[in-house]
Amino acid sequence: MRNLLFRDLTYSDRDTLWQMLMYAAHEQTLEAVKSQALLVRYVENWGRAGDLGMVAVEPHSDRALGAAWLRLWTPSERGFGFVRDTTPELAMAVAPEYRGKGIGTQLLDLVLETAKIRYSEVSLSVRAENPVLGLYDRVGFTKVAGSEVRNRVGGISLTMVKKL
Image (cartoon, rainbow, N blue to C red; front, side):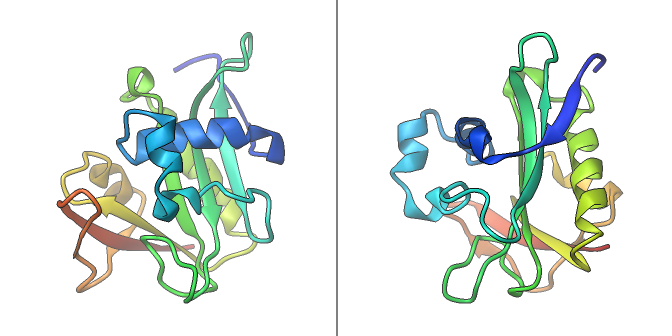
């Protein structure tokens, strides 16, 4: 898609992160996302040490079309794709009406390139039936053996890692 601006996520992008988390979690409302502690942790206190991310916006309106962000976890506070406390977990979403236009690929490339400066690998959790698996495979993510788990909606999710 042409005429997009990609910029760093900042503390002032919290509303954008909530919206993108709603898309990533396949929820219908922000209230549904904000009522689930396991999801809230992906946005709460955005900007803490280790957080980094990119947002794709329409330059003329500053409307967010997608975002990709990384967050470090600890063994006691972990995301769905936790591997170790030195490996940030990726969360990513593109607004439904803009999917399939290359925005997610561009966001992922940018956030991974930025992550290389700080980290040796990145992890993620993805639903086994999610079409984005093809993108993750293409950019070099590999499935963590034995990582398949029943997710919060009853399907199967798996963890993937990419060496940087």
